Image (cartoon, rainbow, N blue to C red; front, side, top):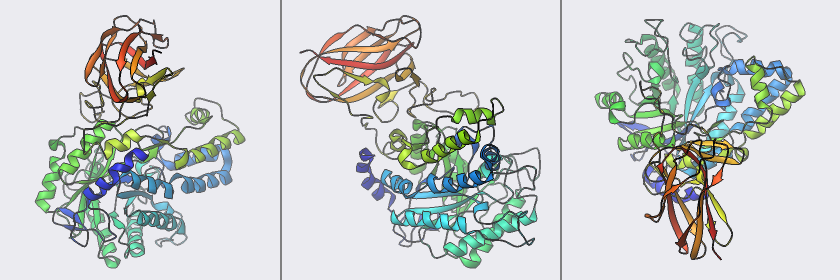
Length: 579
């Protein structure tokens, strides 16, 4: 983490800092009470108050209530209750917020599940009344205190509204057997009342950055076949509910920004505008499309037409290259952002939750493919998962943070791992190439996913492990390696040479077929040209290439390995000083 502290001061200056003053809108900008523009650089706390199955390799289950049912089946009601209590305690703590601030983020977006704050309409003891639950408010109060201590703004986001706000079921924990938000007047009234209660509770808190009142509505109001609400032209019920929510907020809170989202996952504003409140921010969400001005032109037009700020309220789930490009696009256009998400199982977030031993057996049973594990075994696995949630037990991905903060400002690179080469033989692992942008730290022919762009089938790191850059990485018996290098692909390594002298250099590689070769550059100068790499018969058999002798001088130096002819896997570069 220390390698990023040097950029924090720069980030704070660039963002204008957070100073404990209420945020508000002024024309197309978000400003504080002094009138300083505040560019929000935020992180969403997905998975804490609301689990989505994909975050934990449970896509077949999807919604949180279904995950809870499966846990109940294997450990019973008392252990299930204990599991969820500990989940809320362990998943997000002061250490998470401290870390995010130290990395350069200045705001947090909290995805809230309504059932932590109030009962469902079905569970209310008196029909039409609202029972308020202490748990959600206490959790949010604690989070707000951690944000205050770090001078970070907290944005409240109703991610799971009563009844659920869309046909994408996991994002709102919606049960399709029950009435949705849009099909139930009681659910609508509870949503309005919840926002009034939240606004009343936080009305005098300047570190609350705003109220994101309904996350990603996706509903066909006019055409039920338009299940995602992407083609809706009027969106009358959506606008009406958001107007009513805003009125309820303004009864108790005149200061805080109200953030609205269109239909179609926050992006369809047809019929929703013009804004009805003078302190409104327009949110949009962006996933898996190109990072060009054309991709956000519709929102830039909304900003100019209605003279309101726009905010990228949710984005992510891609490669580092895509992250850097998307954030550069936003910041070039004066748009703040909040990323999704800070931790889960997977490499494309700052923190990765490790899979506990025995977890795959639970997954197999829950997917209907394996036998039911015993209660004691299941509880042991779930307890380990709860431990793995803690920040201290997460896998930190510095490349992800760097792509979102430092690489947005510079093309310079930094070491991924510190290697010192001296008297003893050293193997620089191929996967430990420098941290930095594509074409500066490495070059790969496929660096990002564009899953919402027809005809583009790229994927970034096709191994989906170790790092979130474009370089393909797999895991073998002896560790991670760079897989399937193609012609002209390369990686750069900054290392420390402890003693000047002559060194033997070789490459550890595997190749199903012959013909692979590499160049090695030393401080920009080619010192090994078209070194042939041996055929090994398969990807799991590794051999050392021929050895070359080169002269190296003491100090910090940069090596670059390029595939002059691809078709091989690379495990490392071996250095041995000649005595």
